Image (cartoon, rainbow, N blue to C red; front, side, top):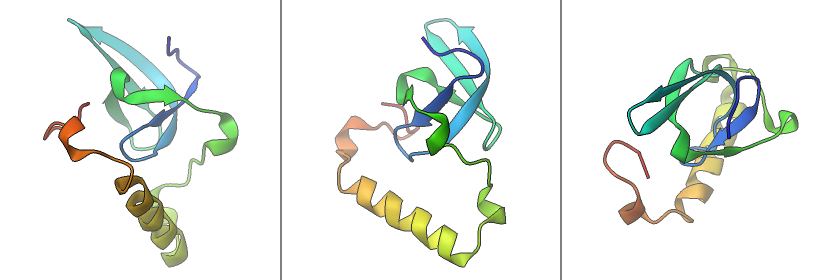
Length: 91
């Protein structure tokens, strides 16, 4: 179970963030991550560790950092079956 203060990774993009809030709504649990200040469906998150976490925002990265992010996303796309993802990004 995910709790405030834990580190977690959003499987679809590899975003690692620190959990700031957990909201239960009907049959869903939403988790607020500090990195982009967005809520994520907890079913799309997996445990992570502090050493994978970086609070540097996309805007603060230099060109090489942004290119590294794009390369990582491209590598992840090779592993993703698009049929397993809905148009909203939920699994």
